Image 1: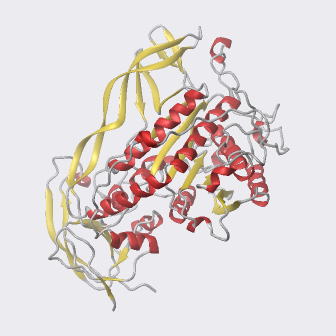
Image 2 (image 1 turned 90 degrees about the vertical axis):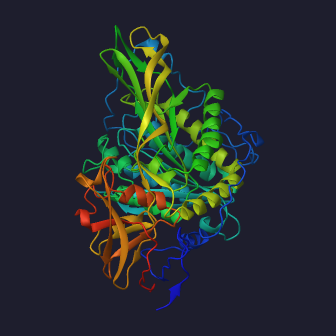
Length: 583
């Protein structure tokens, strides 16, 4: 049996024998796994003032094929596809004229099947498929567009994506050296504006004003991640799952399709394109409405590498907000507004690692959620809603292009740094948001007056660790554990043990090992051939920890993927084990 060199470890005297077999490996993952043994000096943080991301330019005329490369616009006008108009739209909130006056139409008009004048239904799944087919068959010069079929949804509807890149001879997207941006829309079926905006982006990237960007970046677009929910206007998938909170467990085919794209294309940037609820809340003596065109937030889970968070904040969020301001659009951090006995409160996007935004951050990717004001509005203000998302997403693409070298430097450092931390330091298992006072712009539902009101602001931008544990060397999984396949779907290196052995494991007393008062119990555990080992000396170690650390509501043990508590264990030594050879 041929053995690989010992991987890097906190304890150099302990040897680990590795044979070449693991579940669904890739050459890139393996290379990074071994590269983690090298030193990882902290690189200097690039100056934010080194580059300025220009704001989007509004235009009302159609795209011109000879537009200069550096002047991609955010305001394309696209050619409509004729579609049915006999489907009912979503119920519309009734707004006063004074409220509606805050949201005038943009100076441009967007056309997709679902945005046609007098249309009552959004773009259907069949029309979306036709749209992508047409773009794939007629890309602009020096542009490649390819439709990707990711398999069926729960109801059998095709899950579709479009991969776009500027051609360099015969070099495919995966080997052209450019950073890839993944845009995912309509995870929730009742957020149709996100899908319509991504159809606009797909058209303009493939054959319109944004096509020049493809000479510097690649873009993969999933216009509608939840086609079953979209067809019924439902928030959840067909089986009732909130798709945005299934990206760690991967219980649904819709979530597994997105994971497949991430494994294949290894995006440097992920944007979850959303709409947020526009409903009023009650406060003392009045009802107030949210006023912002766009809410946005980067990944904010515990254990996200610091450099990933800094890149998201400085290179993406700040230019994004500036682009919106320059286009006359308003913005704020992603939040949910509530009122309790007249007292206003707001909670930013959560810290759970199961969302697309946060799992992306734990995967060392700049990951954002971007939401337009829209859920519950029906077709009201749809042109402005789509325009807001087009402006925001164009800023994301520009930031990726302008910071491509810096992103490559950060990702190279972070992947090695994360892998080098196995067996040492602390891992934050649970963390809480912090609370402060914050001003929000809110609209009086009756008078239409825009007010600046103070709210209790609960934010995950800064997290307070509640439960920390020593970072393990890895995790052991039983031979019949479904977790091995789920982790492999996430891109983790999962190794099958070839010969019986033993490891030093750690468990925690109390129900599911929860709580800071739980006592650690260490023991030597026999591990049989056929069971699995997931090492923490790999770039996606923080994803493994999110799934396998006991005592959290989102862990594989809590959601039932691991089954019995004895089906997994934290391994706290660098084990001497032999693994199956690769076929």
